Image (cartoon, rainbow, N blue to C red; front, side):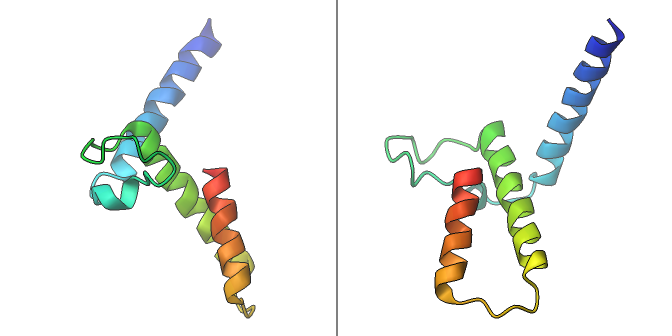
Length: 88
């Protein structure tokens, strides 16, 4: 019973933090509709769009922090961007 209460509290907290972290972001920055051209381009960003934006941003920061100082070719940068799209 207590674990259900803790899980609900954690989910509510993370939902709020996701909304707060992406609150002032432009719609074009949050939404990537390239994989679903049938989707309405005027639709506001969903919570899933906001979560995916945060996933991509965190993953990109991790990659670039790990590779700091390394000389990255265009091919490696494109591969990292592809990995980030697959992950989020």
